[in-house]
Length: 209
Image (cartoon, rainbow, N blue to C red; front, side):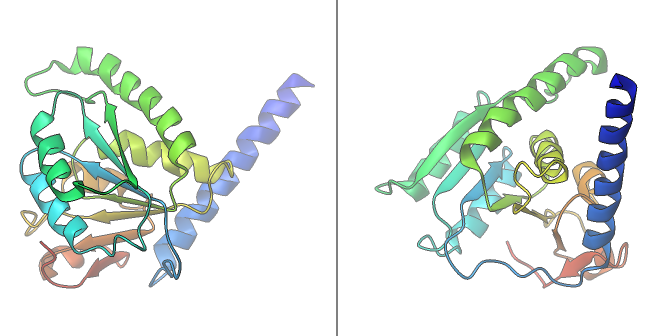
């Protein structure tokens, strides 16, 4: 009986994953939000943060609210830049998350930190219940988007849209994060025409940052 139950769950999950992947591969555009949207924004560090905050500055804060920011632990510089934008606003919250892999960290030890990062994502996504996840390529976004995709698979939050905006620096190829998340996202945008030829799923609107 237990084996039959597990088989049914696995079969459901596989079917659901295939359904989501096919729908996200062949859709040409995604209808976004007419009303307000609970928005979760991932900040990397350095250039990733700078580019993402340029995008955030262009958002309609009355529509994309509340805003939840995910920042890698010890990245105080990103927090400071964020606070400069969100100063005097009340409808935002900042979450800190374990880095999947730090600079010069061994691959063996990164298994532990990556696992912690995945675990960090679960309560964040359960609490925020975002309608939209906005990210632009830092490694921090990978576990978050994978967990969000699994939430969609099991109908925990199947209304969430994942939007990935590739960094302006990616002129000819996708980042590693982009390659991992390409078919898990609802919207995948690049900022150079050559990169848009990689997949029919990719959208190109010109420079955004």
